[in-house]
Length: 185
Image (cartoon, rainbow, N blue to C red; front, side):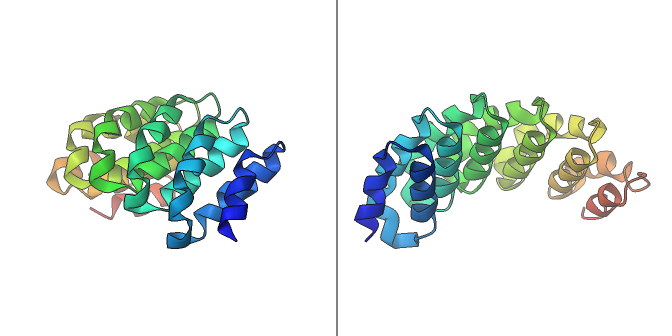
């Protein structure tokens, strides 16, 4: 059954390719033999297919590690949602994604706030490996968007005293979401 779905990754209709990526992302271990074909979709001409390929690979843990370089290349994609999903996928891959954290941190200044949030979250998933990027995360505390500020508070709060002073300044922020995130340190 999944072999047939994998064949649809080469279909002439982008919507079919997108749905095939999504389906393979949702089938756990049974889809593992087809991850190479999903990874080929990272270079699809349609951004919707690239989005789905990132998301699918992000769900497959260690089995997707050989394809993280392709995912990391999408951090520079012209579509903001592709960049967001590439951050999320790399955020799900622990130690194997560490070489790409500098590129993930580069998106802390992305034009789209949701990409900045995804960048913070991805860095937050990497514990001590994210420490070299905490200065850049701290700059997000003064971002124009409250969701970015909250994400930065959460990440800095995960690092105890390193980020405590910067986060403490947000305990009286006007937005409850930022105050709530600041309480987590």
